[in-house]
Image 1 (cartoon, rainbow, N blue to C red):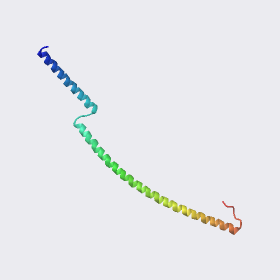
Image 2 (spheres, rainbow, N blue to C red):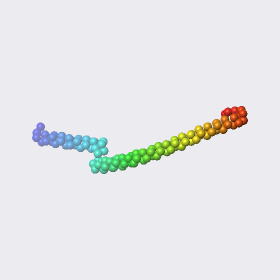
Image 3 (cartoon, rainbow, N blue to C red):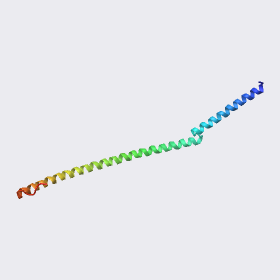
Image 4 (tube, rainbow, N blue to C red):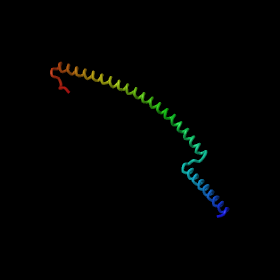
Length: 114
């Protein structure tokens, strides 16, 4: 093998390595969707969307806390009203029993107890 053939073989090997490297780089870029400046814009867009989503989540948590507080207050008010109504019902029931007892005493035997 003389000098020219050796140079051609080395040049061919270097060109083949360069071509193989370029093809592998292209395949890697296609797989990872790394498209230069567009990927940076996409990352910046995703970062801004993430920031907006975090702000929205914070607002939603605040609103949820407000609604939960309001519902707890309404529940406590309703429970107080129910307790008052039950006490009133018990008083009226006792009063009705007193009236029935007075009626039975006044009429002798009276109607049968229900």
